[in-house]
Length: 255
Image (cartoon, rainbow, N blue to C red; front, side, top):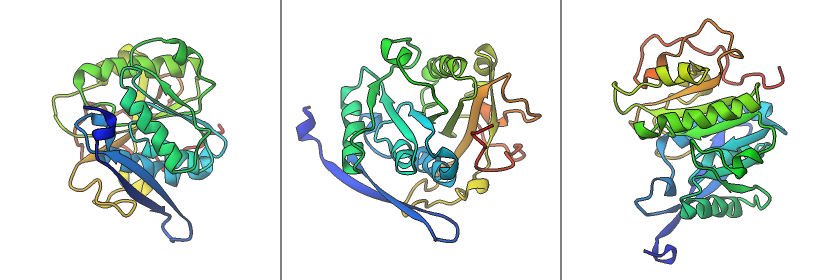
């Protein structure tokens, strides 16, 4: 099926702070197609809410979104003043074109879009500039991809020792775990409770998402950087009733 035969729609998302004194509206083009990356998933709205709440910390920071698809978190970061690079699999040209389409719709012509395939060290990966933040929504979707994702994250945080990987995932199976892979690749993570960034709602940014889906947020860093007492209960990719929390929804990126 050619791209021209797909049905294209635009959805708007409006992010507001608690006092409604500031807001941001972005439009995201969705292609009604079975490919995973062609529409906004529940995890993307939750991660975008975190990005919005951390907007002051993101000013002039360099941000890479992995598996961007329609690129809602990356677009929000760019509109909040970050220097954003969008990426998706080099093997999915339609997704890469959709990343570019999202930039065009939101008047972000200078945001680069690159093909990065998880688990593969490519010239495009090697040529990335120094990074502060890596974004990824629902990248822990297929268990067979978990290690490739973390190989890529491990590579990036070794080159950028103070970088953080902000990621959201949807709880799909209590049997899925990244604990052993985090240890293998010298990574560590902490849970970020949704209530700390006003995301513990069924409807965010004026949308119907995340709905009744159970979405969790975590931050992954190099093990030596994250010198905290927290353990990553969420790395088991299952809901925990007593997960330890970040003290704030907006970590200091200048430290």
